[in-house]
Image (tube, rainbow, N blue to C red):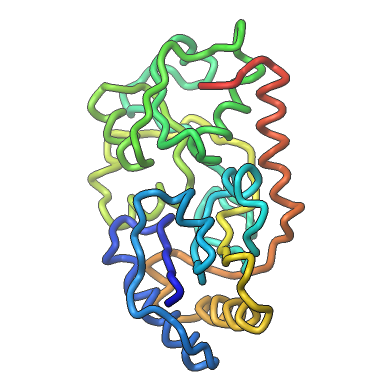
Length: 260
């Protein structure tokens, strides 16, 4: 049986499940026979995205251009969120509300939190942003892996970190679902915009199934189940557009910045 995961957005699994149930029903209505009843919630996402039985998942632009050359793009959702423009999105630079510093350059030799090193929104985007400011390849005094955007925000509130790059969609979803979780935080800037997180399927998925996936994903735009995830539109973004992610990595590398 094919596997499906939607691991990237949603404050909780329960927030994503209604969307999957509606999408699953549309896939079946369109004639797709082997559709799993439930979502997978894999711990090892890079390995999961490379599985030959992957019917549908959502990945990040950084893994897409660095380790997933074989997957097929299904399309990219647009989100009704400040910080998004069409299929593109960016990250907010988030700090504590009582933080006197107002510019990124004021955070030299401070502590940054990031979700993971393979994240475009939390790591690669910020690495490119500090490149012009770095001295001898470094800018921050310490960089701490938090495991998720939400945990990065917790670290800032707890005083364990001073700043983080949080993708605008995750921030908006958390603010809507748990406004107390972002109370005491403020935004001081944003990263460069890049194409948003694409839906993908395995290299071996037949063209007929790929067409059904695209039709069903597009049909979800006007479904009530998309409201809680702030989905506003859907389009097929070409793989070439994601080279912007690789360009940001090269920009940082050319400045001698290989890590936060």
